Amino acid sequence: MASSAVVATTSGKDAVAEGLLDVLKPAIQQLDLHVHSVRESQVELREHIDNLATELCRINEHQKVALDLDPYVKKLLNARRRVVLVNNILQNAQERLRRLNHNVAKETARRKTMLEASGAFPSRSPSKP
Image (cartoon, rainbow, N blue to C red; front, top):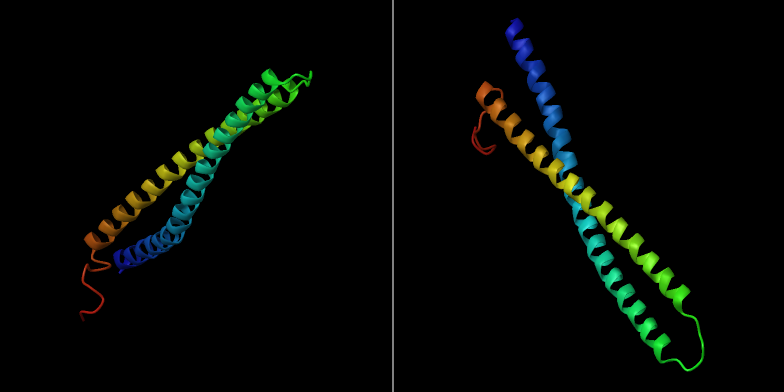
């Protein structure tokens, strides 16, 4: 009697844990996709900043009028540095999300194997009686 109560409690906890994992996994995958698209945007922005800074330097060299564009070029380069920093942060966050997603999948498989081995949930399809 006591062993069946322990199995029921354990299987109940495992069911809750598996339910949580099932809820979290799509959210993690969606967040990973969003981080990936932001990283791509950051790379494009960095390229545009580089092109603009190069163009400003070229314009400044060919100007007959003494127009000082150096402060603007420095601001662009500073913005580029910040974009690179944010991109690095996003890359680290994406790597953590990837590892978390991997661990969630591994834990789900481990728990499913434990439940099937304990006989609490047979590995039959739901359509069969």
